[in-house]
Image 1 (cartoon, each protein chain N blue to C red):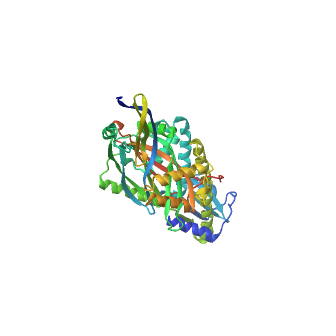
Image 2: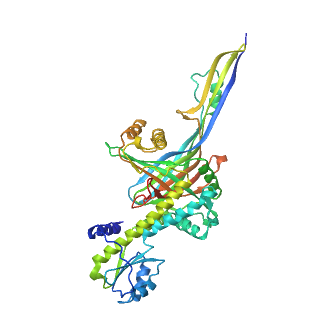
Image 3: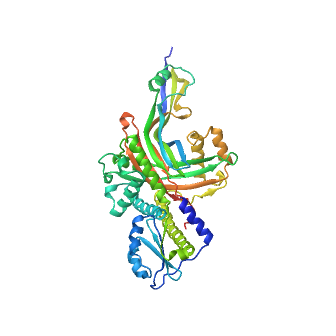
Amino acid sequence: MGTLATLLSLTVAFGAQGPVDARPDFQVRDLIVATSDKKVVDQLWPAFKLSMSVGDLKKLLPSDRFVIRTWGSQGVVALDRRLGVIAEIQQGVDVAKALAKFGGSGLAARIGDLSDGDRSAICDYLNGVAPTETRQDGFDLKDGAVGLDAQVSVTLKDPVSGKVVQIGLPQNNDATRHRNELLAKMPIPLRTIPPGEADRFTKQGMERSVAVGDVEFHVFGLGRRTLPEGLRVAADLIAEVEKDLNSKRARAAHDLVKLLGLDDSLPSTANSVNDLPKSLRDELTASLTENWRAWGLGSPQEAESLLANSNSIGVTTWLGICQCQDPGNPAMHKPGSFRSDLFIAFQGGSLP
Amino acid sequence: MAQCQWIENTYSVTSWTADLPTSVILCPSGGPQVWNTGTMDWFYVTGATTQDPPWRMLFANLCSNQWEITGPVWSYTASAGDAIYNYDNCQLEQGKEVFWDYSGGVVVDTAERDLVRDEGPGYHVTNYFWWKVVHNQGGGGVG
């Protein structure tokens, strides 16, 4: 995330600039491409020609992959939609839209029964958070099922000790129990991974995580002359696209919240537990006082103190994908195993 | 002399499922996480303040059992800011039996027993272990 932090600093340092309107075709002299894909750069280097027309440049940078913004007298910025920070939000939008169709199917669906687009979005996400090789040999992801899951997370902070406690309040109702039954019939089973292999998957996971934050700017033509202005336009463009996608993701998340019958008006912050809606307050109080050990507290008294004194409370509804990894065997008292990846956040109040 | 006769007068059991939290793992920095989880299941009878009548103890001995359930070992490569919540999805039951002691056709004593344990539900059987990772979004939540 270091590169992104630098980028944000640049944005602040250079100040904000409004969008530059597209103008008639002109000869390009300054080009900045924001991408983390080395292939794009390798293909563009020999193809880019100084003073080529914007129209010809756009043929090299197709609109389904790149967002183009002209600037200055002869400048162009191209933003790769597959840039980690952009692609991550786009993926959230795509998965949320796919999950929104699970309402009529018991909040779960067999992956093989999804439309091509929805299946692709779901499989890309699942393969991103867990490599294919971690699954049982020969297992076809199409035979597994995924479901829509949600939990409300509440963050409490003790003003005296500074201790921060994060509480999860999962859904448990007839709909989720029915969903669990469906998922248990179509598990996505894990295989036992030898320690050596586990290290490799860990390394892959680390690389993927770092790559999401990578933002690289590649300068073509005479772009170095006007680098500060070009970077400012590029930063603004990234922020603009990010804002637009965040808005779409928020709307998709809102649809999921409504689908699950969750409260879409929970406050995102509160100064006191007493400021929370009664139902949330009661649920939070019960979970903290009954399960204080699980939440990392030392005693019921500490839980009560935290509830009474917290003056900086955060509330977020998290949504995402759940799957059964092992249905277990109830007759043998062998519990099953489930996993959820919650990555779409919804905070109540007005949508952007 | 009339024979003492304990008769069950009322009996009720409520049953529900719950996702009981077992632990939360906060990940302030990115890196591999390997963990497992476990819980104690039980079916236990308490509630009588004395061992009389003797059937109280018989019933308790018959039904008292508990066993430790251990879940699988999980691994996950966390990003900075991720939080992993572990839950025990379980079946819980709580119940009460009330007995009347008839002697000569007259109720001369009452007794009751609860299906409870440590002031909690008296029956706890794990269905699923469930881990939920809340993925850090870098820029925070949306909406």
